[in-house]
Length: 242
Image (tube, rainbow, N blue to C red):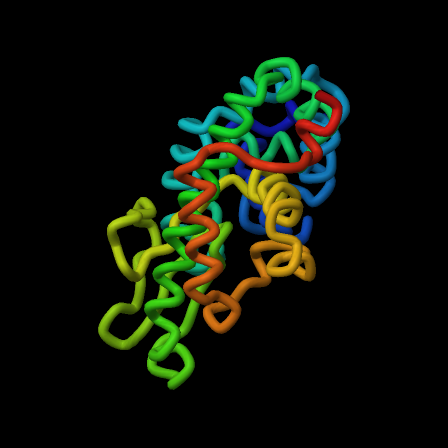
């Protein structure tokens, strides 16, 4: 049973599995049998209520266990450490309890004002990240720098003079740091953006696939517009039934 290991390690298992580490790799990192990893995932996905799952995946607890257990763990590389530090309660709930999460979002939000505010916040982060990548395009194309991460999940532009922060909190004012935003709302934003600007965005399946060469001033202007206007055309997975 999942309760055969302590709650801190259960939470760490969920974080690492959300990052798509194999069950074997997670078991080795956490120090438990592979079967415990599977039991832990089943416990959160099937055995507890959504409210209990949400309470268990507390953001403060996630940050704490990542800092305590992964920073000094020699099995964890820097990229995994960086990604683990960005994982949130909503990430885990959408991964294991998507249907419940969507129902909860409809119940809690259920109005256009809050929904558009969420989308505008994501659009603002994407606009900032895209601007940084566009500004770094020359260096990246000349091999003087490289992108580690993407515009949705965060990351940084790395070079010899700016190797990039690992555990620092994302800072929108840092020209080398890409801020993490909500990946699910980012997909919802894509649905709305495609409705309003079909010619420019219809071929895009996810913002994650965008690289520096895919971003021009016109793209950035569209995100500047919608993030400040705070209204959106069309429907997405969350609002399609409203």
